[in-house]
Image (tube, rainbow, N blue to C red; front, side, top):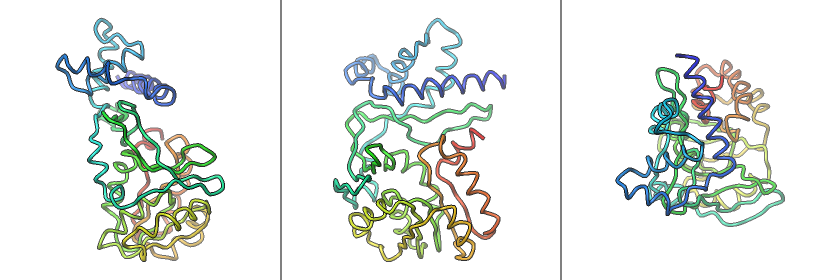
Length: 289
């Protein structure tokens, strides 16, 4: 059973990876609405179209049917755009279209019914690892930082959902590795029980964009301290001396480039035994370790 679950996990991840990386917008509104009109949910209709695109026979093939039932029903989510547009950062921070050297600040978009990762992987008691994929019925705009014309940092539903716990638990003097568009720094700065937020960021272009166009919009900008430095050098040389109450690390783009950095940063925890540490998409990273 354990080996079968591992095989299923691998198969689902492989299929989803090809879909998300190559054709995340192939599902169109007309086709999915036609299926929904038959009396099923958008998630179920989306799943049927996805399974068909994967070459799965969910009617006559027992293995495909089981895979669909075990994963797809808990994997796909129709999201409410208004819920995210009501997020405090989205409501209060306006992002201009600006380029400094190789870094560019702008809005990107998801097309209607375009699939994207929307939360951490869910791990069931039997070991099934269920990715979380979301989609909107309408176009959804989100802030992004591009480096050399490649999306590097974003504030999408995935970032919002996967940072909720780290925002909720932050208190006192907070340290965060990685600036991005300042989403985490902003959300934490709005908390009454947070006194200061130190942000360590290596990329000076990102810092310049943030300082000029984003930070002035923070209502509690006085809580923010920016340090241009390598995260691991700072962790080794300064973190334990500063006596932070809470440390959040967000240095990676996804699981593939995050595992080594996660393990490297974890080693510094022993130097600060009274500090609470959290890591972006840790639950997903642990599925691969």
